[in-house]
Length: 366
Length: 236
Image (cartoon, rainbow over all chains, first blue to last red; front, side, top):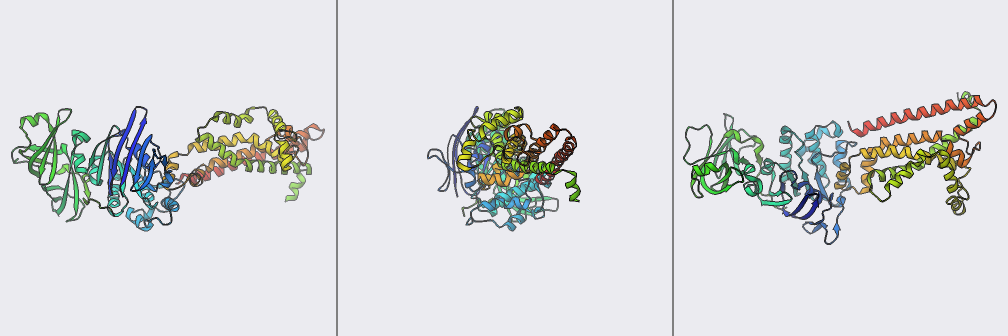
């Protein structure tokens, strides 16, 4: 299913003017707070009626202001996972999970309750009330509740923003499973480039109410115009080769071998690795006597100057791209020119586990 | 044991107690759905004339009860603007009947009921209702499955408060439906009547004790029920 969204909406001093389409898989709406992400998702859910807009899922019209069509929220068949969970406090976890199913049409394709409970690991919580759950547990129940409403589309509005790092690490894998095991398309709002790199099939970068860039995570996160020099990152596809005794994991990428602190993925698994541009150092000559284990060699494919003192230098390594955030001064001093050879150095410990995501399969439509 | 009680109160006093309970019960029960509706409208909707509705609802709280009773008489009396047609078309007569006493009690208790329920509705997070609608619940279903259970403590508190207020209503009742033993003589009217005749103090003070007991029990019960429901609703 492809979701097509065209929305124009004015608030006091803010104008949202956006058009994008979300294919199957996870489409991340990416942008700083105030860029209009939540407004957009609420328009898709029917909780906000935009001034002008057309929202269509395949041939199913959710909203068409010109044709004066506006489907009520309860008829849109959308599973909305809210930032704050929004579990019903007077119902048990089991009743919360079953709430949407009760209203879904009989012939809808239902997820199996037992399977969802197992996937989210919420079996022991079923008889509890939301008041007795931790933040991470609440959010897992909220995911299950949305999933069990037999939705045609899942919306997630910064579902991890209210959680601490440990809880984020607990929930993210469930969204990866959702992406890989459930055929429903997901529209996911986030301001975190780590989440984009791990989850996204498609990224729509929003800036001040407009679409700044749209494409794969590697394309958008490497786009200075969309994310700025400071926010730039690369996303590499990698295969887990081995876990070594000294606590390191060896990855094979088309750009070369990468070493990073031990990750939990099994050998042979395909994963994605996000490398923030500011963690990458460039060197014209092959560096020697360095503590950093990851030294990759490539040609300079692009040099973008930022608004400030920074510059983003992108290397082509095989068919992968790796961006480094350096200063304009370095670009001049080192005489970096497009087409020249260059070495990229990445500290092993700069590759944190939250930058590692499972599955780089481009989700095919079912 | 019922015998002692029956003997302690004279038949006229018993009659007044029974009538008061009947009047207050029906006054509360019948006005409750309207009370919830008005409270919801005032808490959630923006409409033209909202402040006027708010004023009308609260008027009986501030007007002299005699004025409210007189207004009821000219509207719902047999020759009143509405009462005439109620009688002519439906054969419903309110003036000088116990049903009229119930109407007077309901009108006087209505502001208290609406205030309690409105506070409860304002405490419900509309985001929960929005979440329910995204899960497929239409507006009536959202109200029935989310809003109503969450405001239940407030509804119960409002109903019990209204019942207690109805038990004590005097001014509007005596103006609208007079003070007819067995028909419209509630506990307060009976106390007033007993105090008008020499030697009626004993009967009056027995009714005073009854009034205090009923009012106190109503308050305690409302606290108790509201606390239990609130615990259940808070979900821990």
